[in-house]
Length: 76
Image (cartoon, rainbow, N blue to C red; front, side, top):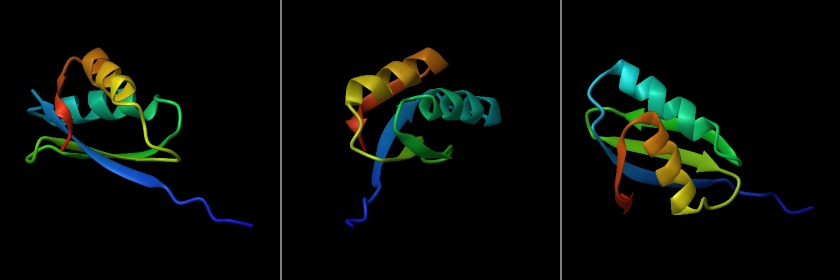
């Protein structure tokens, strides 16, 4: 039996300024299929996503857009 390793990717997100922003981005990213965990670094402007497989950047961008923020250039 092979153990599946999770994939961790960090994305730059612009426009986050408060805990409401953190909750909004976390909720939208958590809804992306395959996402296991989301960690937001408000001061650094990043979202670190743990998933079962690499996520298509378009899916991440759509989730961040839905939350009202902008993915800044893909993976940070």
